Length: 351
Image 1 (cartoon, helix red, strand yellow):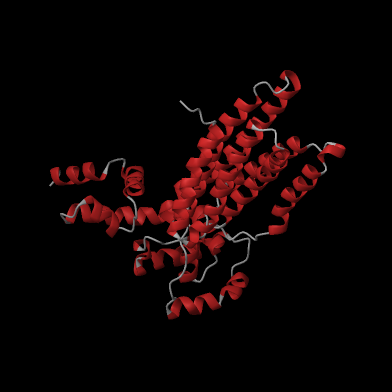
Image 2 (spheres, rainbow, N blue to C red):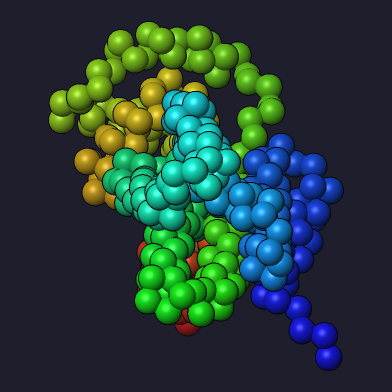
């Protein structure tokens, strides 16, 4: 039986996923396709680097590896309104290219540099995922728990990759690299697919705003500059309560919670209040994030439908503003401590 090295197996699986994303031709998946293709090529280069003695692969491996954390970060910024400083993220790969090309002359510390780079990006992603006001503005509010986990897992995987590089360095220092190939192969086989998975989760949760705005939304969008003046970066308790009151009114009267693609960005546009101010105010006043608050309104609607109609649970979660049954079940159980079926049965038994 032919034995295929693990890096090539990983590359093949990632390539299949990249092809699927390419043919879907979704705008949100473009960056994801690039990232997964990069991971697939990197995994192949790792295989060639350790299975052959061709010099070009020794140069390409650190260069491609240095691109992975920056591209991963970019994929996650698609869900946020971060100011994208592309040059800063291009700088590490440029330095690695210079270091790789001049390696025979002065032996630059590429491995420690890559380890530090991965740790830095990993910490940045973890910090973003753990931020109390860090709800991605462009992600469906019902998908926020999943994207938050994906962002934190991506950060962890980058840090794990750095640890793997450290182990490889130790192996070379004390054992002449006897086990380096196995460490790298297993490490890439675990971290790259998991990283790719986290990026896919986020890309599927990002809402592309291609719809035309109604007249009210258009007028509020024109006032975004004025909004920043009206709502200072530091809000008083009274100002936060006013913002929450306005959001509550919008939710109850307009029933915006029924929009399955509702994002913090869209809510900000509809209300005329900056997204950051909404998120901060909801957190401070309710002690919960905007995603949880919106989902609570949706669950209340679902409870009403479970009691008053004979609709299927699938139809009910769609009619309540959810897109997936898993999100619906998770939030329903969180709020009621019952499954939807159990809740319906308990209400029928109580009549």
